[in-house]
Length: 146
Image (cartoon, rainbow, N blue to C red; front, side, top):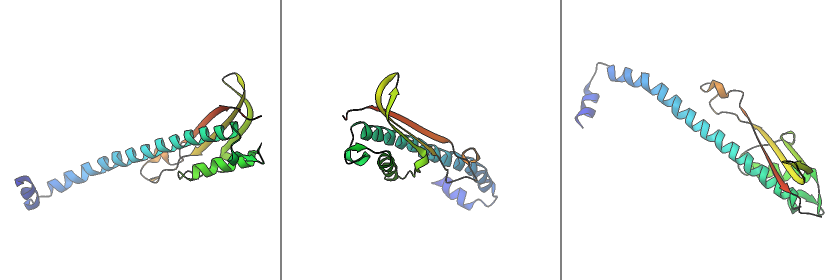
Protein backbone atom coordinates (compact mmCIF):
# COMPACT_ATOMS: atom_id res chain seq x y z
CA UNK A 1 0.00 0.00 0.00
CA UNK A 2 2.88 2.36 0.71
CA UNK A 3 4.18 1.90 -2.86
CA UNK A 4 0.82 3.01 -4.22
CA UNK A 5 0.88 6.11 -2.04
CA UNK A 6 4.43 6.93 -3.00
CA UNK A 7 3.54 6.51 -6.65
CA UNK A 8 0.64 8.91 -6.29
CA UNK A 9 2.78 11.46 -4.41
CA UNK A 10 5.76 11.27 -6.74
CA UNK A 11 5.85 14.26 -9.04
CA UNK A 12 9.13 13.57 -10.81
CA UNK A 13 7.49 11.81 -13.73
CA UNK A 14 9.87 8.86 -13.83
CA UNK A 15 7.09 6.38 -13.19
CA UNK A 16 4.95 7.89 -15.92
CA UNK A 17 7.81 7.66 -18.43
CA UNK A 18 8.52 4.06 -17.46
CA UNK A 19 4.85 3.20 -17.81
CA UNK A 20 4.68 4.87 -21.22
CA UNK A 21 7.75 3.00 -22.45
CA UNK A 22 6.54 -0.37 -21.22
CA UNK A 23 2.85 -0.08 -21.99
CA UNK A 24 3.22 0.17 -25.76
CA UNK A 25 5.13 -3.12 -26.21
CA UNK A 26 2.87 -4.82 -23.68
CA UNK A 27 -0.26 -3.70 -25.53
CA UNK A 28 1.25 -4.82 -28.85
CA UNK A 29 1.89 -8.30 -27.45
CA UNK A 30 -1.60 -8.42 -25.97
CA UNK A 31 -3.28 -7.32 -29.22
CA UNK A 32 -1.13 -9.73 -31.22
CA UNK A 33 -2.23 -12.54 -28.94
CA UNK A 34 -5.89 -11.66 -29.46
CA UNK A 35 -5.47 -11.52 -33.24
CA UNK A 36 -3.61 -14.83 -33.31
CA UNK A 37 -6.46 -16.34 -31.31
CA UNK A 38 -9.01 -14.95 -33.78
CA UNK A 39 -7.00 -16.35 -36.70
CA UNK A 40 -6.73 -19.76 -35.04
CA UNK A 41 -10.48 -19.70 -34.38
CA UNK A 42 -11.17 -18.81 -38.05
CA UNK A 43 -9.04 -21.78 -39.17
CA UNK A 44 -10.98 -24.05 -36.83
CA UNK A 45 -14.29 -22.77 -38.26
CA UNK A 46 -13.04 -23.44 -41.81
CA UNK A 47 -12.08 -27.02 -40.86
CA UNK A 48 -15.48 -27.62 -39.31
CA UNK A 49 -17.35 -26.10 -42.25
CA UNK A 50 -15.38 -28.14 -44.79
CA UNK A 51 -16.03 -31.36 -42.87
CA UNK A 52 -19.74 -30.59 -42.48
CA UNK A 53 -20.02 -29.70 -46.17
CA UNK A 54 -18.26 -32.88 -47.33
CA UNK A 55 -20.48 -34.97 -45.07
CA UNK A 56 -23.59 -33.16 -46.34
CA UNK A 57 -22.66 -33.91 -49.95
CA UNK A 58 -21.51 -37.47 -49.18
CA UNK A 59 -24.75 -38.55 -47.50
CA UNK A 60 -26.99 -36.41 -49.73
CA UNK A 61 -28.31 -34.43 -46.79
CA UNK A 62 -31.34 -32.26 -47.56
CA UNK A 63 -29.38 -28.96 -47.42
CA UNK A 64 -27.02 -30.08 -50.22
CA UNK A 65 -29.51 -31.62 -52.62
CA UNK A 66 -32.26 -30.60 -54.93
CA UNK A 67 -35.08 -33.16 -54.84
CA UNK A 68 -32.71 -35.75 -53.33
CA UNK A 69 -30.06 -35.34 -56.03
CA UNK A 70 -26.67 -33.66 -55.56
CA UNK A 71 -26.82 -29.99 -56.49
CA UNK A 72 -23.62 -27.90 -56.40
CA UNK A 73 -25.32 -24.50 -55.85
CA UNK A 74 -27.32 -25.95 -52.95
CA UNK A 75 -24.14 -27.42 -51.44
CA UNK A 76 -22.29 -24.10 -51.77
CA UNK A 77 -25.23 -22.29 -50.22
CA UNK A 78 -25.28 -24.76 -47.32
CA UNK A 79 -21.53 -24.34 -46.72
CA UNK A 80 -21.58 -20.55 -46.88
CA UNK A 81 -24.60 -20.47 -44.57
CA UNK A 82 -22.89 -22.78 -42.10
CA UNK A 83 -19.81 -20.52 -42.09
CA UNK A 84 -21.95 -17.40 -41.69
CA UNK A 85 -23.45 -18.76 -38.47
CA UNK A 86 -19.93 -18.60 -37.02
CA UNK A 87 -19.22 -15.15 -38.42
CA UNK A 88 -17.08 -16.16 -41.42
CA UNK A 89 -18.29 -14.72 -44.73
CA UNK A 90 -17.45 -16.97 -47.68
CA UNK A 91 -18.28 -16.09 -51.25
CA UNK A 92 -19.09 -18.73 -53.85
CA UNK A 93 -15.59 -18.35 -55.33
CA UNK A 94 -14.07 -19.40 -51.98
CA UNK A 95 -15.84 -22.77 -51.99
CA UNK A 96 -15.01 -25.75 -54.21
CA UNK A 97 -17.30 -28.78 -54.03
CA UNK A 98 -16.95 -32.11 -55.80
CA UNK A 99 -19.27 -35.07 -55.32
CA UNK A 100 -17.12 -37.66 -57.09
CA UNK A 101 -13.39 -37.36 -56.52
CA UNK A 102 -10.45 -39.27 -55.12
CA UNK A 103 -9.03 -38.66 -51.66
CA UNK A 104 -5.77 -40.26 -50.56
CA UNK A 105 -5.81 -42.42 -53.67
CA UNK A 106 -9.30 -43.80 -53.09
CA UNK A 107 -12.24 -43.00 -55.36
CA UNK A 108 -15.88 -42.38 -54.56
CA UNK A 109 -15.50 -39.46 -52.20
CA UNK A 110 -17.10 -36.06 -51.87
CA UNK A 111 -14.71 -33.23 -51.15
CA UNK A 112 -15.05 -29.63 -50.07
CA UNK A 113 -12.31 -27.04 -50.11
CA UNK A 114 -12.80 -23.59 -48.59
CA UNK A 115 -10.47 -20.61 -48.53
CA UNK A 116 -10.66 -17.38 -46.56
CA UNK A 117 -8.50 -14.29 -46.29
CA UNK A 118 -8.18 -13.36 -42.64
CA UNK A 119 -8.54 -9.63 -41.98
CA UNK A 120 -7.14 -8.12 -38.82
CA UNK A 121 -9.06 -5.47 -36.92
CA UNK A 122 -5.78 -3.69 -36.18
CA UNK A 123 -4.13 -3.21 -39.60
CA UNK A 124 -2.10 -0.17 -38.55
CA UNK A 125 -0.52 -1.95 -35.60
CA UNK A 126 -0.11 -5.49 -36.94
CA UNK A 127 1.47 -4.78 -40.31
CA UNK A 128 2.29 -8.45 -40.94
CA UNK A 129 -1.46 -9.19 -41.07
CA UNK A 130 -2.53 -6.19 -43.20
CA UNK A 131 -3.21 -8.16 -46.39
CA UNK A 132 -4.33 -11.09 -44.31
CA UNK A 133 -2.99 -14.59 -44.47
CA UNK A 134 -4.92 -16.97 -46.68
CA UNK A 135 -6.50 -19.74 -44.64
CA UNK A 136 -7.86 -22.88 -46.24
CA UNK A 137 -9.35 -26.23 -45.31
CA UNK A 138 -10.19 -29.37 -47.22
CA UNK A 139 -12.28 -32.34 -46.18
CA UNK A 140 -13.37 -35.59 -47.78
CA UNK A 141 -16.27 -37.89 -46.99
CA UNK A 142 -17.15 -41.22 -48.64
CA UNK A 143 -20.23 -41.11 -50.82
CA UNK A 144 -23.13 -42.94 -49.17
CA UNK A 145 -25.95 -42.02 -51.59
CA UNK A 146 -27.02 -44.20 -54.47
